[in-house]
Image (tube, rainbow, N blue to C red):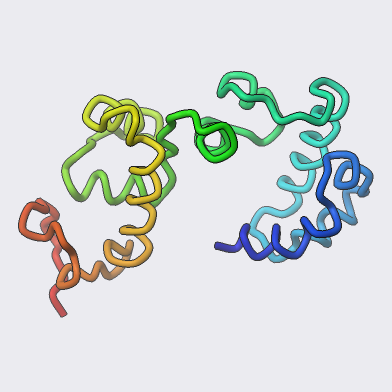
Length: 167
């Protein structure tokens, strides 16, 4: 949600890798200061912009492996980019996807990559990108980290989560 606020503010002015990459480290930090870990993120954003312009002719790569070569881009981010921009089926496991899939008993993986692999086995490939958004929505609105709203959950009867909350 915070990233959406920041990008809405930045993208009207800094809408190309060239424009964004022209910022200094300090200028980039000022742009994203209200985001956590802004020092490291500013460094990665600038590195990404430079790599995009120098190596990829300012075109975002269209495969997950190459996306992960960009500074600051890991599996989750590469999956989101591939899914959103290029319509490539991908399951990005963020904190919401991880929490909800574990509470529902759909995955037991100890880390996001293991969870991603488990979910890929049980969710049809053509639904991966949609499922990512469904898990996020459910995690933000219903199956919250600290106080899940189990009373409003459509799958509460099937949910094995032991600490259900019906307040």
